[in-house]
Length: 362
Ligand SMILES: Nc1ncnc2c1ncn2[C@@H]1O[C@H](COP(=O)(O)OP(=O)(O)OP(=O)(O)O)[C@@H](O)[C@H]1O
Image (cartoon, rainbow, N blue to C red; front, side, top):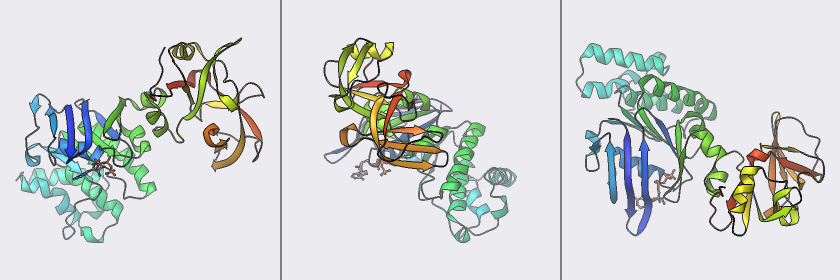
C-alpha cells in the first residue's frame, strides 16, 4: 500500500519544464533520496507526491491507488520541510501532540505517542518549554517529531537538515535512519547533499535539469555512474575525467590522453568497453582509487595544490583540461611543483563516450 509509483510524471510551469517524464518506483518501506543540484526538480517531484502540486502529465500511485487528483490532506503522508512549520506560542508537547489531538485520538494514546516520540528524538527535557525560546536544531527535531508522531506510512522530508549546524546534522542523519528502521515507513528524502543521501538512503535517485539520471544503491551510483554528470556529482571530490582516444599498445588497449601520454593498460572489462567506442572518450577514475607509481607507470601531473583534512590529503595535479586529483589517506612526500605519477586502480577506471557523456560498456 505504501509503495510510491511515479508514472511518466511531467511538470511544466508555463513554457518551462521543471520535470521531464519521471518514472520511479519507491518500494514499500524503502528510504529513497532524491539527490541533485539546486533547481533540478527535486522539490517539484516531492510536492507532487505530497499533493501540493498537480502534475502536468502522468500519474502518482500509492500501492495500487491512483492518488494523482487526491488533495494533500487526504493522502495520509507526513511532510517535513526545510523551513519547519512550528507553532511558536505552543510548548514542545503541544506541538508534538497537535496532529493527534486534531485527529481526536484518545487522550491516553495521545500522551503515550507524544512521550514516545519525544524520548526517541531526545526532546523529553524540552516538553514543557515554549517553542519560541528554542534553538533551530531543537525546532527541527520538533518538526520531525510532529510529523513522525502521526506514524504516517509515507514520510516525505524536503531538505530537513539544511538549516541546522554541521555537528547536529551528523547526529540527525543517524537518528532519521533509526526512525525509519523503527517505523518502517516509506521515506522520500530530498537533498542536494550527497553525504546525506549516501549515508541514509537505501537507494538514490540522482536528478539533473528535470531529468532522472540514475537510480541505484549508494554503492552502485558511486561505482557505476551511468554518465559523467553522476560521476562528478557523486563523490567528494568527484571522479577525474580526462579526454582521450583509444590506442593499441604492446601492453594492450589503452587511452591516448594527449599531453598526459598513454594511460596505463586497461583491465579486460574496460578494454571491452573501449572497443565499443567510436571516437573520443573520457577516461575516468576516482581520486581515492589511485596510488603513486614510478615514472612511466602512472599519469603524470605537477602538484598545484594540496588540501589536507586531518590524515587525508587531496592533491591537485595538472592544469586546465589535464587537471586531475588524487586522494591519499596517509602522508605522501609531495611538494608544490613536484611531478607525481598517479596510477588508477585498474578495476576503478570507467570510460565514457565524449559526445554523449554516457558510460561505455563492453
Ligand atoms: N511555481 C513555479 N513557477 C515557475 N517555476 C518554478 C516554480 N517552482 C519551481 N520552479 C522552477 O522549477 C525548477 C525546479 O525547481 P525545484 O524547486 O523543484 O528544484 P530543486 O531541485 O528542489 O532545487 P532547490 O533545492 O533549489 O529548491 C527550478 O528551475 C525552479 O525555478
